[in-house]
Length: 241
Image 1 (cartoon, one colour):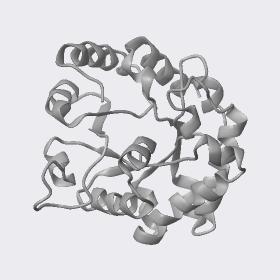
Image 2 (image 1 turned 45 degrees about the vertical axis):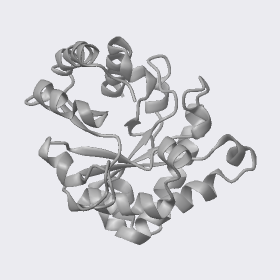
Image 3 (image 1 turned 90 degrees about the horizontal axis):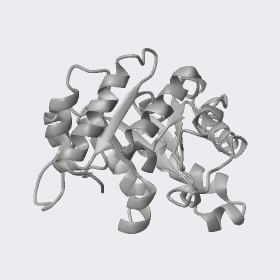
Image 4 (image 1 turned 120 degrees about the vertical axis):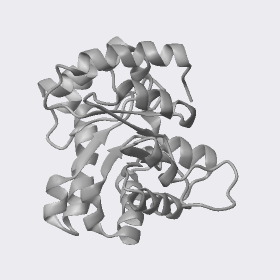
């Protein structure tokens, strides 16, 4: 929940200028709902895509305060984040609700970015793989494994978000490999093609080492995306890798 019209424009103008040299790198910004019109107008015709940070699992109706996937499409969104750890923790979104939002995104023609990840307590208990598998399986069982070809997966260890702590490249790779293997157990061809992003205090300083891991296909960037130079440096690291 960051943003202000003037600051948004300065940030996006810088990103837009840099993106002209990013052949081979896919970049998108997912912004709060009130700024979708501004982002659309600033980024239309550039290599940078845009999307929203969540959506309703409902397509229309008496759900005051909610925003549907069809509304997002009217602002030419390509992506929408579902199941972000803050939505799960702060707003009580369940695995079933995340799966329902995933389906709603697909119905609207959006690409869902599905977040999975464990808390510090779960990591210390050694249940990381079980937690991630449960969250992932809820989506696969509701929508079918083939739908992951129309989605992006993101591993975000909750203990490394906004804490300054970051999973080592090896820790990130281990969970990403587990995710890919979990999908492969259902359908190998889907697992080979699905993109798995890492989201947990990615910075300019650690982006290259994280992106060098074989199963880390990119980043879901939080705080560093609010600073143009930092976000651009992370995108450059993705291009290098």
